[in-house]
Length: 362
Length: 266
Image (tube, rainbow over the protein chains, first blue to last red):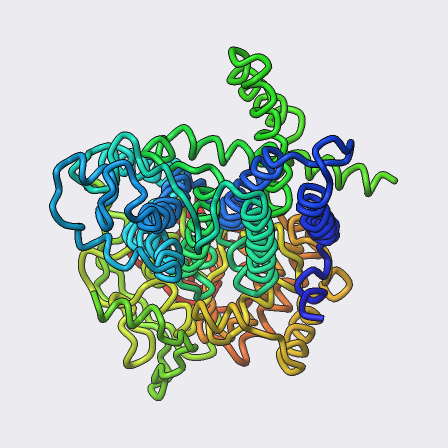
């Protein structure tokens, strides 16, 4: 009942969640129950790739929430994603225990290599899964809150705000590259063994992570949709279109922005936390400013101001990327740039806009 | 800092503590403001009584819009004082606080929320708790729905309730903005050029609307169209170079030699 109320007037969302449900049941089933020679068998590689796409899709929903509905073009959401990823990576590092190359029961390999004697204080607690999960949400949330507190209160908007978000993600990248920061420097965190006692190499663990990503995507979508359906969601659209006017009818614009921006960062953090165990590595490259721009391109291509458009864009672009970077690696960036240009010129509302135009024409 | 964080979680209820027992809604005293050396407002004095409909006219650059900006908190003056009623210092509050204290503003260029429906535009303006969390969990009750319908009736947009505000005609947008001021339940309405771009029929309706509002609200109208100002039959203040040049009814204004020289005579 609650589900139907959230999805009222959202046919795209109903279709998307139905497909997601079917995929979530079918993919692990076809992977785990069928043998490899069966034509319907889904390989473990595919399960992991799809799981990765789902975390990207959640990231795209988070970006659409702030860009499509609130008008904040964030070019720094990769930072929240990577911080969530690092929080999960720290837990996975501590799970390795004495199975590392140097066999130290407490210290991760890179710390032994750097000749550190003790675990830094900020690594405490990360041997607990629940603690890592909370941190994966809390750290991006706090960063977004502090960033937004200063930016929105100073009424920085538009392109200036976008540049500030780029600067934020770039600064984080540079500091995470430093070994002294205590997060593995250049190499990041990797060589994970297991999560909650389940080996990351097992097909069933991979299927479990796939299902978890799917559930997180659905929950993130529904949360975002219930915000956009609320009166606060309408205030957000009003801020996007005429910020000053909203102030003159009595809303505190900076608080509305701060709230939605923080929620969005938390969603991005969750996506990052699910991404890392499936990929098996997190390094400062995730903070690269280009990554953050790419997320915005997914949303633009899929169609912003729809939420599910971001999902379409994330899946389409990343599928093409996986396909093209192995088939014709040299043309990938040209293809991405070309796709972006075609969409901006011919499909200003993205693929989701095209779909809804087709539906209303029928 | 902690103070500010607490304020974030505080309710942003409408402030209804403006003291009007002396029947004066707005005091502007000795207000001056200059931009890059240009004196936009030069020791301006203006008092507006409760339930008054005041017209403000003046040539371009006379300081009309700047005056509105000062009253609504968008621009801070270099000197002078501005009070709403006896106890609300306009110079110490932000735009949204001033709005919640009961000052509503309609812009020169109609700014409605184009991607929201007429109904939703009015809903957002409604006089209620405007904090983040109350707004997130807000549900429309019967009384509120009814108050929106009453306003839609008044501004002749009932039939278009579900239409996007962006699809309205220019005149309808102007009315919708006035409707939003009514939803805000503002004590003081600042209305910038309500007749701009309106047909004669629409203008007559607007005059009627403003005349009706006078019973419950105090209204300041800034307008260029002299026919429109005449038909409002209200006291007029003429601004010139940031100062009050003349005050009085239409007859007095028209016969004032200073006014004729700088404005009407052109």
